[in-house]
Image (cartoon, rainbow over all chains, first blue to last red; front, side, top):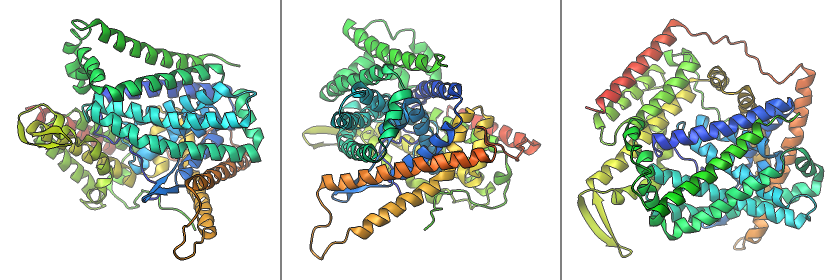
Length: 311
Length: 263
């Protein structure tokens, strides 16, 4: 095939129904917020732009460079799309790309598409744009480009981390195998992503700097910087913990009843939910609770930003 | 050069091709969900699901093994699940030491791994059949009828339309790079890794600018022709009795599979 599928496109069958549905709900909420945002701005010009940009991401994924031993680096594009188009347009663009990859090329499944959109479209856009936005404004070109590079690398790592968590929660692969494997591979893939993103942005800086100023002016506020930064921080803090002590995380999930709920079919969850938050150590409650709060807070902020009327 | 390798639609006249795209999309989704719902060791139910798939293949007149021949695309992903063979709790059949870790293969592990592979294999095939028997514009209209926001379906429609154009563009860039990168016999071709990455990055930047400027021209051309943010279709997409019948039959069969998986 012309473009190389990455291990991030999860096919159907590899995620349990519960995990797939939860991811679908989260993705649908955020994409709906992005849609209402774009609808409200009533800028019909944006639609051809986002469509062509989605095709651009697709085509750009074919441009590769040889790394070593027959492998090659190429782009996923989430961070680049969000930096160039702004976070909401970036989210819609990436959603369209992933939807077509799943629908037309079976690169990623249908039931798992929610998870794929979450991993490769939403998280990458939030981290990519948020991290870039942290330093934007009056910073020099070098600072901006390095921020974009770090953002691109982090976005790939975060996507890989989330995919590992989903695979583990579905009972497809144990945490102590999937985390080092996915993060190890994607540390390299992310490096390719970072290099291409930096050089592509550098090229655009040189030839059409006005396009980048435009992004800064109207496409997303400082909240994105905080949300993106927070997710990035969360991933950075959690993934070393998870790779160093996967059994610890596994135990937390098992104690809280979450692991069982995620792996079982929906009709089996309800009897289980009578017990899950009782009879466990205080530490695991706090850990699971804190993780939940961060995730929910991030979603709420994103959705609220999208729904807030902005004339 | 012109890229049209992407179109997965197989033109022919068949019952499946004529079926309303909404029914086809929903049936595919229900089929995938049904596979996800089946318990791990329900081999008879998986077999029935496979028979259903073969029947759909036959109805499409593309040949009963049309999807079978193309069904291995999700296989590389199986690598990620291979450890469940050894980590699922159960009575060990066979065990060995490797990397100072004790690995025990259990029957429960094999069952789990096989079920994951079969689910993935069946679901991928149904999705393959869906795009082989439905034109992409029809697919987009089905999504619209299924309440996917118009903005998103319009973006997907544009993506599909310009996919071919921009892939041509990226092939031109790749061919130009190829043409410039000559190497003498026995000499290293190209520069350092960073240099190569810089080249690829500049190409992506170039492609971005070409796409961006193209989208501007497209928008202006479309505005001149009366575009106001909506795409229209002349295809009415009305559900006929055959469509209702096919939908009912699919649901009945999938329920039967679910019951079969639990007895």
